[in-house]
Length: 107
Image 1 (cartoon, rainbow, N blue to C red):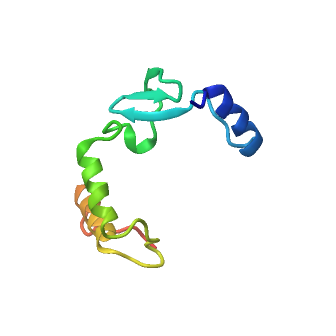
Image 2: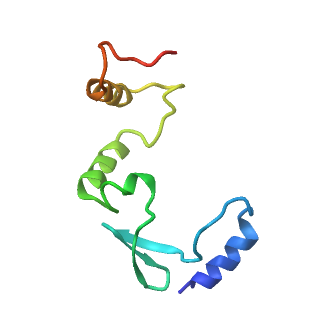
C-alpha cells in the first residue's frame, strides 16, 4: 500500500513548487460528501472540487450522464469543433437569466 508520506515525497520530487496543496493527505476514493485517503482513513470532504460541491462524489445522475457522454466523445474544444449539447446548455442558461430577451453575450 502506498502511504500519504510516500506520495508526498514523490510529489515533492515531481510536481513544481508553484502547485500548492493544503494537506499531505492523498485521495484514494470518494462517495457523496466523504473521501478516503490512500491509508484508508475517512474524511468529510469540506473542500471538494468545483463540480462536486453541489452533488457529492459519484452522484448517480452525474455518473449516468458521464457514461452517456463517453459513448459519444470525451472532449472537444467548442471553439474548434462545435457540438449541440454546448448550444443546448447555453440556451437553457439564457432562458434562466434575468433581463430582456434575446439574451446573448457580446462578442
